[in-house]
Length: 96
Image (cartoon, rainbow, N blue to C red; front, side):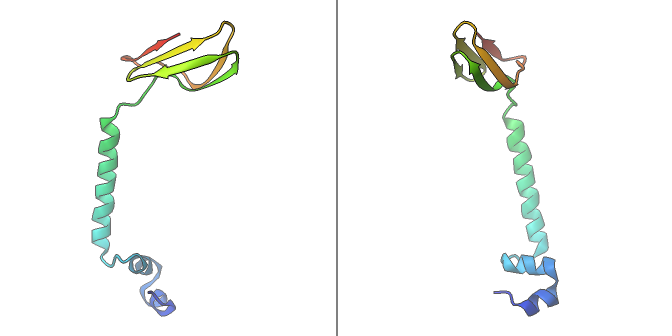
């Protein structure tokens, strides 16, 4: 447990490290760097999806089926759909 005297003596940042049980700042920095590298690598492995996103049916009826790179929309005549984002990537298919 860290006392108020420890907080004064160490300063706020050192006290934070002590509270979390991390007394070695370089170790923490290496851990943060490892996490950052992992995050960047994991984002680059999964391609960003460009098919239309977040459909809201305003009027009528519609169903949406998404598979790996295909979005299929089946709707009744006159259906109104609002999309948060609407674009179709080079290797993607959107069927109505």
